[in-house]
Length: 470
Image (cartoon, rainbow, N blue to C red):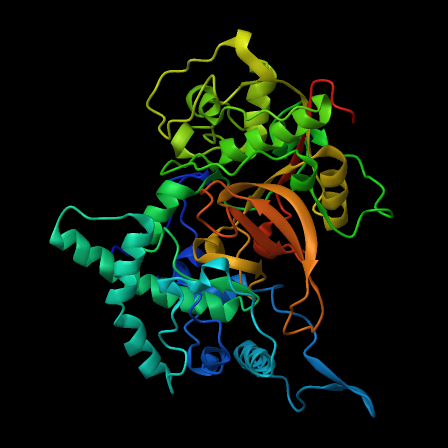
């Protein structure tokens, strides 16, 4: 909990947690969230990392298994030698040394990729060469010009001077969080996004919505449906080095869920859009609003966990609804409104794509890749804490919880030639989000693969359309 953030009230979450649910309360989300432009990508900021250790106790608890293994340096003369010697050190000291190494490499020429927006007003360096953290904070918090640019960029205005003042204070608090994210996630660029004037509670309520806090161990029981089954083990020897369903015409344009916790419906429709394309060769934009209005399916393994429109849901229960309903209508026949206050207007005669079955995929990343290549885009759950400030690059944070709160679509994978700690390519997943094209890399997110970062491998499902070639 950041006491500097207006609206923080210290309350822990209660009840069931769904993708994009208003009641999502992730401790890590409170500990490091929100936005500023790619202002903290320079080595000067990274060198101050020893003074920026603001990570809270909750974050440290989440970091188990997330710290890059083996801090060693190889020497041509003596082979591999330990970076440090002597008695064992505590985790904070190891983290500090790790961050210092990253700062050294960045200062020596290993730069972080910058976004296309770097030429804009919001990308000006405001603390690039400050001599110490105090000067950086002073420059950061004197951010009126950046706030004005933020308002212009996103067309925002407030009804009263009091609201304007309040949002500016939230904006400044979120700049601190974005700086922290940049230090914890140096291979990505973090900055101002359209969410920079929102408190964590407001962001969770409007833009997340996955009905599950803990990553599940997938099985027939945890999938919650009798017709779902564990995906069979697929061969992985001949997987391509990189793959992207956008290159094969199986992915519709980026959509925008608005201020409705309906991410689960976009993940569901996106997976079926891809499966339908594989089955018919025709790409159809399918209706999320049908799911928001009509799907009230429940997960029997979690009493009270039911799909509930803007209140959140699960992709697996949405697939179960589609098996019963017969399928999804086209977006044009049942357009998205961003609210759940309307009546169900489903017309079975206008079904455009139908589900034959769906499966849950092993947490093994090679199996995830194999299912992606064979079956099309996959419905995925993720911890969205670093997505709140993401501008571009490959997100591979040292610390990220695996409590899932957001539903997205996995469409591809690849690798990028910048990894300042390991000095090698960084493999990543390509994620289609549902926050519009102005967020991230034109609506997409790259997150590193190989160690279940932010729980991205924990909740993966594939769907088959009627007639699909599986």
